[in-house]
Amino acid sequence: MSRSTSAASVRPALGWRAASARRKLALIAALLMVVVALSLFVGRYPSPGFMSLDRLATDDLAQRLVFDLRLPRILTALALGMSLAAAGAVFQQIFANPLVDPGFLGVSQGAAFGASLAIIFFGSVAWIVQASAAIFAVAALALTYLLAQRARFGGSVIRLVLAGIAVSAFFSAGVGGLKYLADPMTQLQEITFWLLGGLQSITWMQFWSIAPAVSISLFVIYRMRWRLNLLSLDDATAFSLGATPARERALLLGVSVAATAAVVSVCGMVGWLGLIVPHIARRIFGADARYSVPGALLIGGVFGVLCDDIARTLFAGEIPIGILTSLIGAVFFILIFMTYGHVNEQR
Image (cartoon, rainbow, N blue to C red; front, side, top):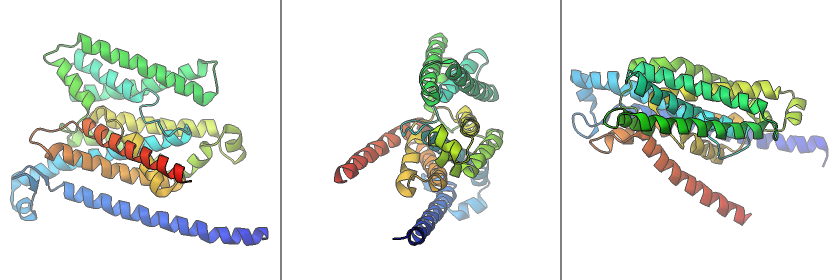
């Protein structure tokens, strides 16, 4: 078979895969819109279940509940799911490691330390806790990069991994020390609830405070998604294909950390979402980041909103969303792990 004949036979296959991926993205986008729309009517007022349109049209309390409380909370849950999923996809692609998540470089642990510090020394003022969490999340990333550059062991990726582990342990120890110093009747409880994650106190002010960072970060990740295919290669190969690995990796890691720091600062610690959703996206769309990254964004949004719906409606008392994401994420991880092993055995 000649080279031209081979290329001609490959092009239709690639076009079919692209069309199939676009159809799947459209279906998941439609699912996300349906989930967000239905979530506005799910709650415990006036009774557990769905609120009717008639009630929303005639009840002033129902209108305030939906538009002043549920809507900002749902949008924040959407931002949380999309940000952690996109950041997880970026981290796993760049580090070529399917077991990393947005807290990989100490970001989540730095945010937890910042929030705990603010709760103990500055009270429970929401904007101070949020600002402190964001500042220490970024500081954790900077410290990780500083240690990685000064290390003399292994390649650049290995140094970054080891530095992230060290920084995570450092800030985790700091959180433990602050919990020991906290007042067990007030401050310790607030720190514990923050570390469990939750959206019960979200307002329009908090949503708008994170919207710029999240929007810009997700836009950059989406626009550069096709570059992730190159950045997952070694530096020499990526450079030969026209990429500038160090600069582009730094940009993508930076915006991923910015989005993670923003949502964690208002939602607390929410684990597993950034680890599991990229796996699900790759199972549906394949390893090509042009489709798996948008897929992770949409699936993460669905996952975040559904988890929040369950958290606020399953019982009379609200369940911390971090508990739900960890539980559901662990179940998904086991299923993916078992299925992947079975597929490999068949091969």
